[in-house]
Every structure is written in structure tokens, then in C-alpha cells.
Amino acid sequence: MTAASLPARPGPGARAARLAQILRVDHAGELGAVHIYRGQRAVMGAAPGRDELAVRLGELESHEARHLARFDALLTEARVRPTLLAPLWRAAGFALGAGTALLGERAVHACTEAVETVIEGHYADQIAELQSREPALASELSGFRDDELAHRAQAIEQGARDAPGYTLLAGVIRAGCRAAIKLSERL
Image 1 (cartoon, rainbow, N blue to C red):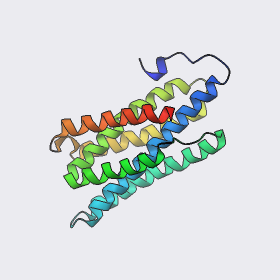
Image 2: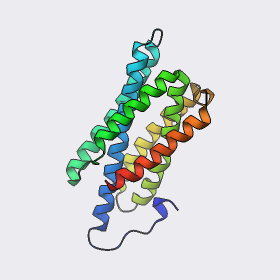
Image 3: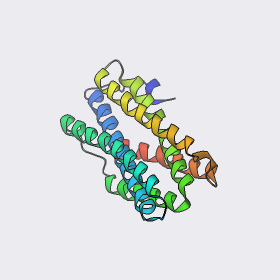
């Protein structure tokens, strides 16, 4: 059962509480994504012959940074605190980025493909849930989801699925993303 198919929680403040969860988790995801790309750029930027990849990673980071800035504003507007796990997601994101970069260019792309696969589904569920009661936010999330889909397509085109140990690597990253989503919604 997806979040979109769950009935709304009853009671006063339930809609505001759910909106807070959505904003908190999406902010956390964009924060993590920015730091994944920073970790990858730190390694690839220092590697000989990887300048072009480092530039592309910087472009992807800038997309995620724009999303993060928008979620910063939405959190402020809605008076919602960010996840308490933000320091952990910064460190974990950077470590995941640097770690996959150390495994090579295809592992970098495998990381992007795995993360964006989970995030696309997560955004799709939120969009369906918010379509009728928060159409402006649903529309913004649709634009962010489209960016994530473009990142995933680019990663696949660049050889993500040819990374050594792709199935295991992508599976671990996807499981980590799903766990981070659940934790960030609540904490």
C-alpha cells in the first residue's frame, strides 16, 4: 500500500501534520542529494581525467541545491522544523557520494540511478496524495520529480547498470533511501 492509497488520518491538525512530514522528508532528501554530489565531486574533481564528470556532477548538484532552497523556504513558510537527522544525512550523503566515486564512474551513475528510482516513486505517491488538497505543491513536486527522472535517465545512459556489482550496490542504496525516508518523516 502506498502513501497515496492510505486514508487521511482523522482529527484536528492531521492535515498540517501530514504536510509537515512531506516537507520534512523532501527537504531531507534534497539535502542528502546535494551532499552525495559533493562527495562524488570531491573524489572525481581530484582524479586525473575526470574533469568533465566533475563538471556534470556540479550541474546535478546545482539542480538539487535549487530544490533544497525551495524546501528551505517551504519549511519556513509552514513553520515546520527540518529533520533532526539532518547532520547524519549530510555526512551519510557525502560518504555515499565519495564511496561510490572511489568505486569508479559507473558506480557514480549507479548511485544516481538507485537514488532517483526511489525518489521518483516517493514523489509520485506524494503528488497523487496532494493533487486535490494542495495542487500548487503537487505541481512543484511534479517539476522536481521530472528533474529526478532526467537525472536517472542520464545515469542509465552513462552506464549505471554496467557498474561492477550493480545489483547489490543499487539494492543497498535503494534500501538505505527507503529507510532514510521513513526516519525523516518521523524525526
